[in-house]
Amino acid sequence: MLEWWSIVETVEKIDGHLRLYAFWAIAVTGLLLIGLWFLSKKIAAFKESGQPINDPKPEKLKKAAKEIRKELLDTQQERDILTQRLRTFESESGKLRDELGKMRKKVRNTADSTGSFQRNERENRYDDGSIPVTGDAVDELEPVKPAALLSETQRKTLMDLIEPGPKGNIDIVAVLGNDHAERMAVELNDILTQGGWTTNGVSRSAFSKPPQGILLTVHSRDTTPTYAMFLQKILAATGLSTSGSINKSVQEWSMTLVVGEIKS
Image (tube, rainbow, N blue to C red; front, side, top):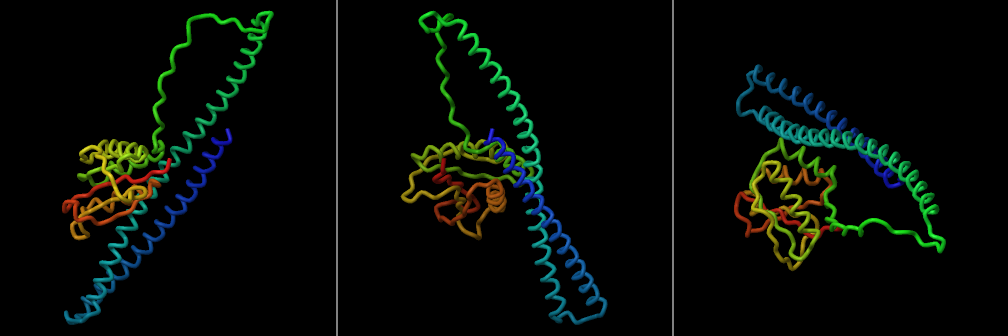
């Protein structure tokens, strides 16, 4: 029960932080829009005043306006990601409250059943204290599948962010001999393919110095796919440790996702 309360409190704290970040992004977007409007007015005033074309001031204003537009697009993208995470955590918070209510009810029912069983057990004991056994032999227990490394919240957040975004082709590699890395690679492969990405499955490779967490590798900065930065942002937004590197063995305009050592 303490664990459930801890989860609910954590979700509520994250919910508050995300709301603060979302309000911050909206405020910054508004300031950028106001700055862009003022710059546009100044450029229009310069044009109406008949300034010479070689005058450096309008060019500087145009360059500043271009930089503000770029910053505005980046801020809007961050705001959209924060808004989506906020919606996801609000939904998960409600589900956790419902599950907590069900767990309380289940605990009460279990306590009632346990008390009833103990009373019946005392009534059915033999005189020597042994308990009679009836019925068929106990069925063998089914093997328990290992728990998923990505939580349900992380999986839902990834799917919500991947589906509307750009799609691409990506190779997924797991560190050979690392069970957690292979399981994480399989889970990411499933999510990406469900979101519309093209993969070649999961391959295994040995590394003299395995990377930590997730590593996105490209051929060079000039041949980096347009969707590489998008994928890095959403993986980081989901709470996965993600970094990037350049490797000439990777084909140009393609990307390799390496799943390194993952802590259990």
